[in-house]
Length: 226
Image 1 (cartoon, rainbow, N blue to C red):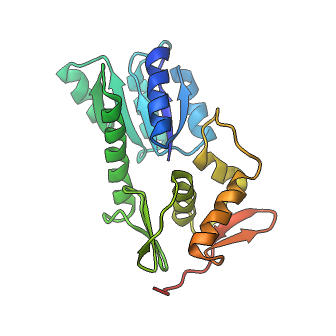
Image 2 (image 1 turned 30 degrees about the vertical axis):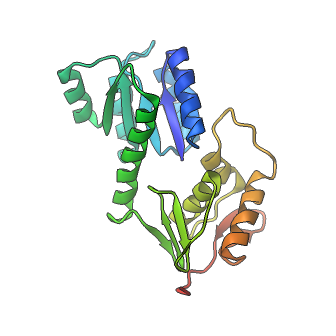
């Protein structure tokens, strides 16, 4: 799961980013509203975390821009503005949740899980379960089952597989899959995606993920062998 964090307080932003990274998320951090649209063009995000008091623009304008560009993107506002009217206005503008500083970092992680879980359930028709033949994924719990048996996965193995299932029928390049797994500042081994694909094939069988030479990867044919 990839998060875009918009926060100009470097001390708080650094602590929050480290907490999210420890929780297993890929995190991109920008410190000004003018960087928002460029960031959203550069990657697909699962959640945006937004401060309201930015140096170059009001966070409300950023929230409006987020909703215009991607109405279904989960948005969590974290701000020092704690007034009732502030909370009501931001929720009306499209925030999925609202936290007032100072915040507990564990609570932030829990709120992120909650709002992204609701979004995933909506995309999955209310069940929150993604399926491809004998494969079933529950993104909210990060659990995968294959032919009825739970298969342990690392965070990045799960996210890569989830991306392939959500985009089944499409060929995804190595670069597109790297965007799912890593933030901007992360060091990426040249064969990282190939290594994760290899691990997934060992766990689910070699036919689950196909290599399309010169283009990338996609899921193999869907079967009902359960």
